[in-house]
Image (cartoon, rainbow, N blue to C red; front, side, top):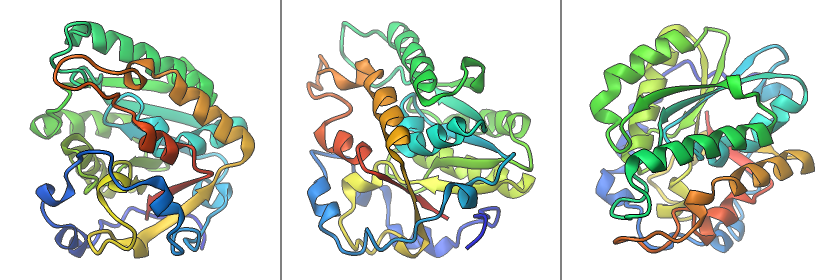
Length: 270
């Protein structure tokens, strides 16, 4: 297969097969990484080379609902593209200020500032320049309510020749879903190539889950340098790796999420 072309909207049957949001709840530890690694179908997913994903000269744009989503979704692809001199842009939809609700040590304004700094440092670890990010400042947890703002910003930021990555429209987190829907619509209108990264899907789904369009899944294999850059970038998101106060005590990025992030392969729906 040649260059991935995601400009055509996804079949509506994908939405029907996924069920409602309640069936995709992000609770508990989720499906273990061992379960995914023991599923024979996962290593059989077709791998595309870097040139097939990103022909030389194209810009890779990653639209991240929250700081750290760019790393979890496609940190390895970003790093590999940057290492060969490719141009990258990360669109930060929110500043992630709601991840520690009820934690007196992290009021929203302070947390937003911290997460902006973590994201900027993480991008440098991936090989991107600081100017390779734009921020939209949409309220965390309310992306769907601010979809017109997001769509307007995307129309200004995207170019027809871009290859665009965002979170899957049925990922299970409301901000991930709403961001994916907005990006898909804008890409279809502009004509950008578009692919969707499952992030929380690995948490609530199970191997062979009928709610997931596995037939659309393709892979990118990370070399040692790209994996090391992704690991280093994620380690800079300290606010998400430490235990929280308030009602939540576990880190946002728990052991299973980190195990998934350590894979040598990244996956995208195309």
